[in-house]
Image 1: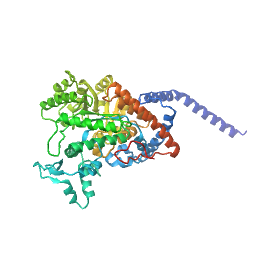
Image 2: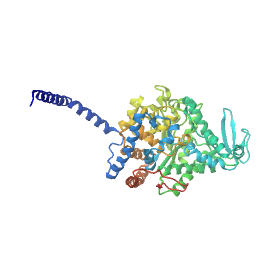
Image 3: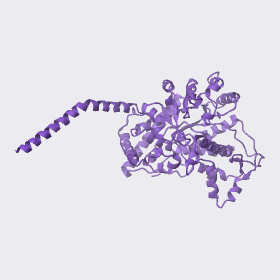
Length: 530
């Protein structure tokens, strides 16, 4: 061996020794790093779920699709949850992850609003073609719609059928009407700030409410809304409403109690017709919080108690709705709200609270009052991470947040859903449910779109099938049902889940990709057509 070769071997050996020594010196660092990451993983929501062999196989398929989508976005910076849903919806629906979620049994939808549950396209193609529907515009370019045998003198009414006939084609009129009943825009920047988007949002609700509160229209609308959720593999629905009085063609109005009984009758008939694939419906009376004085709140509470007596199994509780920043703070109306839990008739509370970007203002502090007023669930709770004591109290009381990611994005609390406060809560295992709020208004259907945003953005790269399973379980656990009913619903969901896992394995083995289910008519079940 030559001297040069010998020297090279010595240098090489010294290098190996140095590397080994460095690795040894850094071993403590790597051990600490691994332990820290492992400890973080333990707290992510759903991590204590144990997957069986079939679930593990389905999870492997799901995570391959999820990571392929995330990896592509990481390099291109084109990430759908960072894009306004009004622009991203069509791309989301092409995602393999979305197609998977569309088929998944999701448990219960716990945060919805009455006249924004069903797809607007269905309302336009169906209800707006009924006879005796009139339209007019009032101050502020507000569209009013109402069924009447004889027009009243509120404004200069025109038959919708006549107005439609005056357009070059019915489709052109229908597109314009649909734009008045939703905020699905080509460019969300047309609504530049939170007040502008809320004004447009509330305008759609005013127009929709006048039309669908015609008693036969409401019966058709509510049935359709429940069908859309059932077809999205949701088993139980709890929705909120201001309870405007239903009316008849002659202009007569039902009382609030009579109106709620119509809601209940429609819900019960829907259950009778779909008992194999649907569990039930409950209603939360939720009048507007933006009122002039506390007297109105007193009247709300008194009505809530009467409704609880009239429909004890259907009425789930009480809430206040509307743009929170512009409504009365809960601390200003404590006296009537405290009486909800007093007396022989008690009404549970489900308060919207903390749906704001402000910190330290009265709206922000609604979170504190909602918890002290014994809220069963908190709607949105967007600001809770700014209140560590309130967050701790919610944990101690077992009060979950109803997270509605698309709503928070479209209504301009946040633009990139990866930055949503719920992402931090989910990483800690804080109790949350995911719901859709007002899906019809922005073109979503059922829960699948919001589950997609939650899975891809709020759960991050490490949220897997266990996270999704926990979301469904949470929705049942934190529903307003009694314990026996929750147990029944959980059994029903578990059966649906087992069938879903079995079907997913079959589809994955057969094709390697999923086919989104197609629903043919309002009488179909949630059987996928593949």
